Length: 228
Image 1: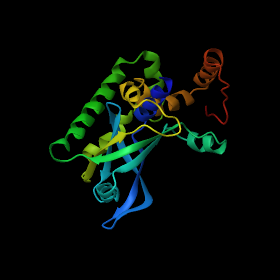
Image 2: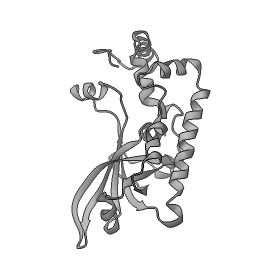
Image 3: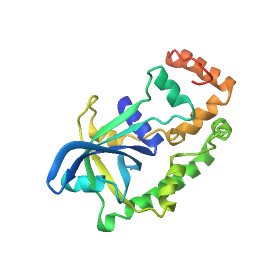
């Protein structure tokens, strides 16, 4: 259950990931992998991926629907470089499954769902406790959420093809797919970057978080170069 929650929190905290499909042409599958960064959102536990109309994924999936999708926990500012320097890479989710294009009457549904997600995440800010709002407002990123970063998809004139990623069981840490789909992410997960950045803007907050981790989570947290 904890692993399922972690998986959903990572998916809900980010809005972009790396889609991998098998390179193919008119002669069939070539067995090589093509990768590109794409934007997505999650509905009922499954990623819906926006792929530019001229991207090779559109051709690849016509021949071979197999694919994988990788998403990491987002970190603001210098944190990604710092974590990489100490060989502490962010948590990552890697899913294997089928990459299926939405066609005809279903093609417009993700756009409507995305509007609902953006509206819901923005209205959720009003329900946060004062302490959470204080952290979000002190962030250099502002009280941004995943939906704010996805708004560009709705505003852009660029043409996209929307794919539904159907995960399958398998991988290094195998979890029950039905349990994953039934697990809901933490309501704060879509504001992960702003929360981390807001905490790092204050020495008092950083040290308070360290004490909390040591006392309640039995974790050895450290402050190095002003970053958690």
